[in-house]
Image 1: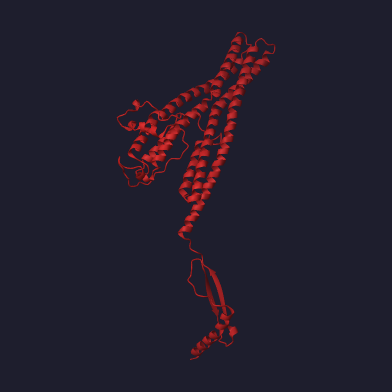
Image 2: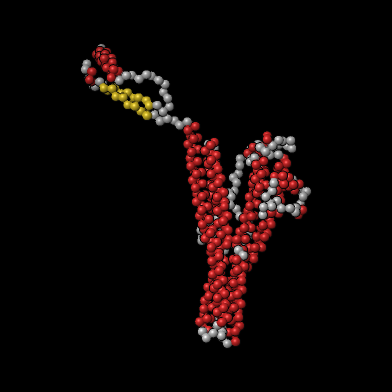
Length: 431
């Protein structure tokens, strides 16, 4: 009975308290709760004893921030923004790399000219001293000077032949061009993403793969990490990443009646043209550059050994100048060896044999990349996942220095009845 009276008294006090509270703060209109809205938590504190005074009650209101659950659109927008920022960073890095390779390329080209002229000057000056030493009053001084200059020339030739400055300069020139090409592609992707919001993580990964492939193909440091200048086997240069294995899809086949508009621009005739071009490049163009590259490499290797050997022999002969009957022969050997060493050095570095070998490697790599592009498109069974047929044919024709109509002549080469020995014309006309 006492508990019932206490409950009635509590309800009476509450009813007398609520009007005054509502008068002080209007009660908000009930509304539907939305995502991200703030909720209210109310707590009433009642003293241990029941009193009739209104001051005994206190109402505490706390507004709670409820975190909004991100929608799928917000997640996609955030991911796209991050991809754009990553792609922009890659573009800036590519521009910076291009500038560095350009500067280093000019520096190493200067190395080639300066070291060529300096080494030849040392060798020819030493040859003159060796020729004048037998009849000069200061024979010992001339003989010693000739020996020192020829020894210096031999060491310098050996070091220069090891690094091949002309080849280093050609590597940096190619790297500059390829880094600028990557920068243009990234800028184009950013411009397209800004208008269509199509930049994805796949675009970022593809750009990063190209960056790493270029860094490996054309390293900046001289030592260590320099590319081998006299490799055992001549291989095409590779500056593009290896293609990732695509997920197999159901093939969408089409016959000779398939229209280009319904098959992403690909027709049976276009596939035959691409197969014919692929076969000609493998049999003729790439092999031609590799064969000539091997000849240039062997010639350059011989010159790289002969130059320091001749200069060293001349330096050794200069030691015996003025030694009786052998002195005359020693003087002639020193002069002849020094002159031959200067001639060999001029042919090797004045003719830029290292640059020529690198140029041939890059030309072979150029055709190897065309091969892989064609194989990647023909190897994709779903034509919708290929690059557009008409656009791809135009790109191949431009790379080969031909018109699109010229590609039709390669259809007959795709036939298995045509042997590789019967192929006479090259696919590329550009170089």
